[in-house]
Length: 224
Figure 1: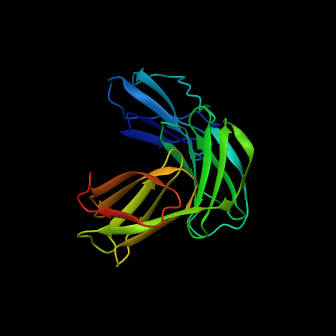
Figure 2: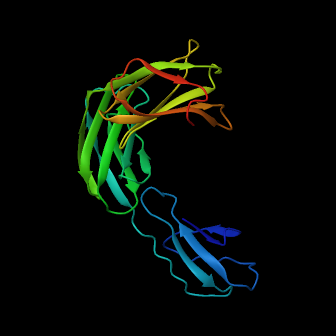
């Protein structure tokens, strides 16, 4: 574990032994404690703690976990995420054998979405209410969106992304200006074209593209 005051003073601690942070200025600080196994335990904080305080106790909350396994043969680079409608997503790491375990915030229901572009498969489990550690994701035949980006682009630094209500995917534009996004669940997607690596700028955008569309055309400087 580690402890800190306002991020400027820190010490490694052991949960079995009280810890001391010395050499602090006299003004009040925020105390924060975290665990080296951050995926299991969340951080604990307490504000307005004056230097010199003794017997301070910070309790690490257990994180809310999702876990389970994937049924089927996964391709390289498959991506798994937990997403709630109208909110961001939490990505997960897939381990050998297709098992997974990761922490999420809150207990609201959402969906587990797996996009396997390499083998054009997807997995979808809706109505998931954390915590759950017995989830099973069955792979199904995925859908493809492919097409061409017209106008000035750069090979290797022009990217195309697709974002739907639940799933998202991205790829790099080919030398011929074509792109292929695979492993998508059914539904409508917004496609965006981004230029650059370090600092990206959106150069094209189109909404309402259905999974399975194979002749999509975007032009640089289309509605951004």
